Image (tube, rainbow, N blue to C red; front, side, top):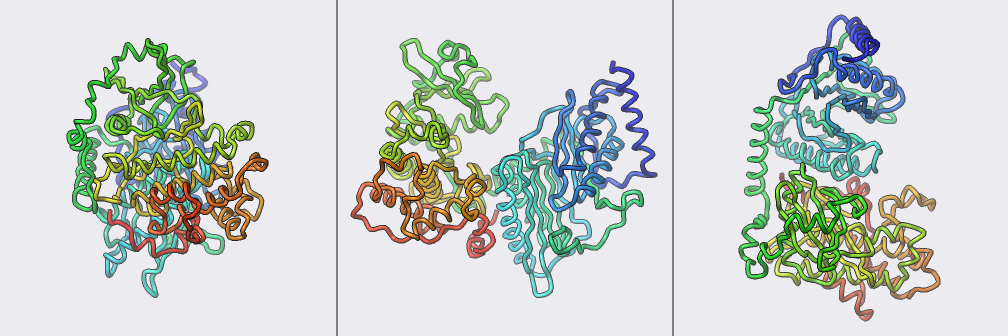
Length: 638
C-alpha cells in the first residue's frame, strides 16, 4: 500500500484538476483499453500522479520531455511552432483530461491540435510505435481533380518528412511545407516526430502514414493522420505559425476556461486485443496487396531463391548447437561483448578447436529480428569474397537465434576514423586500400555473386577491419535481393542510416544499385577527410557549409587536397587524393543515372588513365527537397 502522503497527493492532484473546469472537452473516437488497468490507491497510481506533475511543470521550458517515475513512463510533445505558454497550457490540460477520461488505464494517449501526452507501464522511449493510429477529416470537403490533389499532397508531405527526419538525435523533428494547388488555393502541410526516435524511424513512421492517405482520405482537403511517434496534417488554411504569419485557419469553439488551447481533442487508448489483431491482419493484407499489385518489381522470396541455389550449401551443415556457442562465449558474458546493433548484441567466442568467432545474438522480442536472421543466413551462406564478412554458421534453438561469423579483430572503420587519437593509425595507403576493398566488395554483391544484392546500409560502422586493415563489409540484415535482370526496386519501408541513404530512396522509396553507389561515395569522402557527413555542418566554422558542398567547392577551386584528414599531411599521394575526391563526388550525384556503376568505380580507382567526367555540384537533402521538384515527379505510387 502506498504511503498515506503519496495517496493524499494524488487525491489533491485529481481534485484540483476536477475543479479546474466545469466539463471536459469531447473526445471523438475515444476508447479505453479493457485489457489492463492499474489498481485504485496503488503505488502505480501514486507514481502516475508524480509523473503527470513532472510533465506539466517541464512544459513551461521545453516542447518535448520524457520521464520515468517508478513503473510509469510518460512523455509529452508540443507542436514545433508554438511558444512555451501555449505548450504549458496544453500539456496541463492533457494531464487533466487523460486521467479523467480513463482514470485507471495503463496505456492511454491523448492528442490536441498543439500537443500530445502519453504514458505506459512499459518503456517506449526511442521506439517507433504504430499503434494506436487513426485519421480524421473533420470539416473536410471534396476537391476538384482529386488525383492531382492527392499527388500534390504526397509530394508536399514527403518533402516535409525528409526535412523533419534530418534532425539529429534529440533534435526537433518538425517541418511545414506549402504548395499551390490552384491560383486561389494553397495546400498547407505539417509533419512532426517525437525527437527521441531516429531519423530513419521518423521517415518510416511518416511514410507509413503517407502510404495510407490514398486509402482513407483521397480527394479530401483537410486531413490529420496520427501515430504515437509521428503525425501529419494538411489543410487548405494555414493552421501553423511561421516567422511572419499567425494561423489563419478558422477558429474552432473551445471551452471557455481553456481559450488558449487549440481545441481539437483526440483521445486514444490502446484498443482491445481482438481489434488489434484484426487491424494487424488488415494491414498485413494491404502490405501484401501493395507488394504484389503496385510495385514495379517483385523480389523472389528467400525460400524460392534458396531452393534455386540449394547446390551451393546446405543450411544443416552450418548449424551450431547452443551448448557449443554458450561454451565459446562463456554463456554470453559481458566481458565477451563486442558491441550492440539495432537487432541484437555481438559477442566474441573461442571454439574448442581454437577458432575465434563473433556471435550475433538477436533480440528475442524483435519480430523484425527473426526476419533479419533468416535473411542474413540465406544471403551470407551464398557469399564468398575476401572483402565480405564470412558466415561460419548459425543456431536456431529454443528462443535463441544466433549467427556465427569469422572474428575480425580490428573492430569497425568508424572506431578509427572519427577518433583523433586513432586516426593516425590509418595512413593514406591504408585508407586507399580500404576504399578499394570496399569498392570490390560492393561490386561482388552487385554483379559478381550468383545473386544481385543491394546492401542498403553501407557505412563505416558496417565495415570491419582485419589484422592487416583489410576491409570486410558486414551486416546484410536489410540487404535487398533482386532478380538478375533488375537494376532497381521500390519499397514502402525505408531502412538504413540517414546521411548515407540516397535522395531518391529517402524521398520516394526507390532502391537501386545506384543507392549503394551513393552510400559508397559518402563513405569514400569520409575516409578521405576523417569527418562525419551528418555532423560536419554543425562543427565546421567556414560558412556553415554541408559536407558535400564543402568537398565540391574544394574540388571546383582546384584544392581537393584540403579535404584530406590533417593527420595525413606528411605522407600521401596528391594525385590519389584528388582522384578519390573526384570519384566520390561522382558517386553522390543527385541524379542516379549520373552516378557510375561499381565496376566503373573499380576501374577508375585502378587506372589513372581513365578520364573522369566533371561532377555536378551535389545537393544536400534539404536543397534537393526544396529546389528540385522534378525528382518528385518520379515518385512511386504507394
